[in-house]
Image 1 (cartoon, one colour):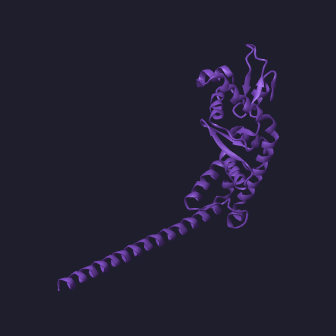
Image 2: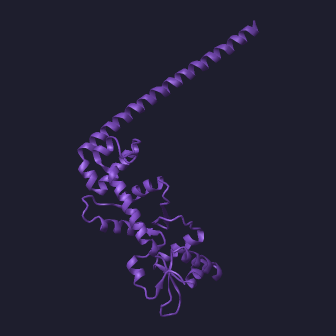
Image 3: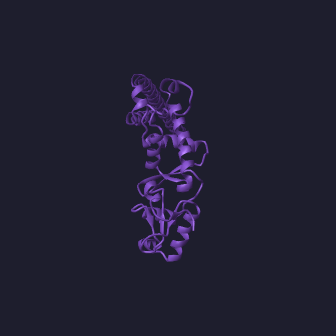
Length: 255
């Protein structure tokens, strides 16, 4: 009897567990269905919003950024394809494709000067100058989105951050920790000296010279031997305005 009662108790417990599991699965399914329904509603509202404000989305960069943030929250990527609803409604796929092409052209045109590493703000400024006659204004967020699409194509474009500044790299140069620390120091004036690096980073002079010469060889730095105190200045166009770097006497890209 006791054995039967024990078996019966185990069966009852197993049945209860199965029942709890079924209830749990049903609750999870209800929640999932509800979330899908809410997501479908959000997407529908987003499409209606886009129809109503399409001119603002096209012409106003701040409004466009906010629209992208709304899209991200419901899993919509208007840039995923140049075909389909979003492309036909807004034409922003073509807009970012055009930006991408222009960004590539600017990076190629300035590569001999900056070695393929350009400040995002400067890139955006040059892009705006190039697009003076275009109807749509361009923001840094637009540049970042266009670059992200270039990166997806395996084009070698990448955005890196040095301190709080974003730099766009258009060549496959790998910057190590020493190089990044030098760029951080250079942000103050746009240039550094061996003596400054030794003092600021507590490095031996050999380490400073080796890192600076590597950056020079990669085309990321330019040297100025015409300073009044006789010290060699290493200019970094990626963190200094082009006008400032080009204004230095005796500036050249290699020794």
